[in-house]
Length: 331
Image (cartoon, rainbow, N blue to C red; front, side, top):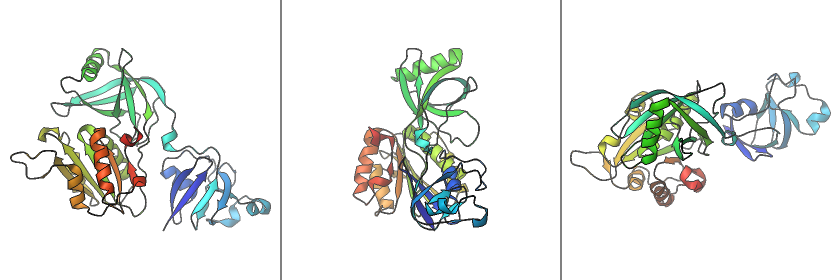
């Protein structure tokens, strides 16, 4: 059993498992939630239950007066929902509301993932660093003040480094100049975090991931986050590219071998001699696998036109607009 908890005044939504406290669920889903003792004594995690029912691990240990209980006051480090809830708690910050900062970073590692793709590992140049969540992106700022967005390819499950996948095809002047500057002095200015695509699985709702080209970076971050949270929902990744060499990582094959709940389908946008896998419009490939998408959620990243076209077509197969997560939707 999973309960839905709506938090006011920020209009946040939590999914809380049966037997789990509201605080534990909030921290598991990477919310900033006020707490201190975690023993139902100090009151830091207190708030008001506006609707629904709760129970406590140990009701006798909860430091609340009869008047406070009568008024709906609860200590959420110990309070467990027994129904869906509407609660009021001040100071709750959702992962997508983390402050955006501009900070210097240093190039720690660089390698070619393919002829067109470079992997960069960047480390903060001083004590401060960008606090981000899986699925978000940053702007890289060159010496001319020009900006370009890149998805963060690693989940923030340890350390402060940021992994980026940079496509450096001929004609991309920004990337070419950026790589020249990085190789010259090893530093870069980063702005972030940006974006509202976060890993927020809905219970009993299988996940489809769509990566177009270097959009794989965002899906990699989200999948790493799902494994960190021990998610067991089925995940099916569709990665669509133009040329076979554009599949620049073997990680999806490794994930498929390692995790029983993960499936991978590579897709070429045009059929090629010697290619026996899926090809053509990716939304047609997805709908062949899933004619009814009414019980699925979807994360998508890649060229905005491709992402929007795919999402529009998949709505005809039942995909709900409320269960689509893509930065393209913001634009």
